[in-house]
Image (cartoon, rainbow over all chains, first blue to last red; front, side, top):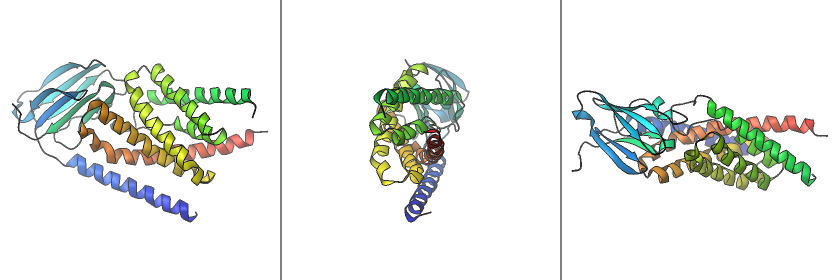
Length: 119
Length: 166
């Protein structure tokens, strides 16, 4: 292996390591209990998960497709979606800030924010 | 290379890229993270760039991205796909001359990172939620891994293709 290849190998290993570290930090970090659902950047709904006592579903027609959002005490997930990849469903439930659930084909984002609710 | 032969080869490469793209889109995603995938069709973009040139690779890429969105029926994903593809192509064009053929995987890994960066930025613009930037670190990792993989695949494919040539 020549020098140039070595340097780039080290750079890529460093990027991979830092990225994994960053991902791990982001996904374990963050508090909050208010789930904010946005469609195309516009806020659609805001749910205080700490006040949810019984789980229920929300049906959303995004204009690009359909999503069923499952709200549980303390956490939220996408239960069903007719997007091509189904990644939003595979992501499972989130209970804290940090990493939001994203359904890219439907322009839908669910993020958990701090506990104050704007009136 | 005669013009007709070149055109036929480009059409063939576009068809192969499109097929790979469609097959990959039917496979289950490797991780439940939006944007993480192998991007196997990129092998063809790389091979085209080395066999025919930059302009030709750009044309094959454009055909694949547009027709891929049409065939997979997800026009909503066209923008992400195009932004990622364009940025990856740009990085490939700029870096390819600095590396030997044995170092093609480096070009590909850089392109992989660029692809995911473009996809993330376009996603941020479309959903207008800065929170999606939280996916930046893991998408960088995914870009490096899939870029290396497709880069090595392209290198072996080129080696095999050279044996076929008269």
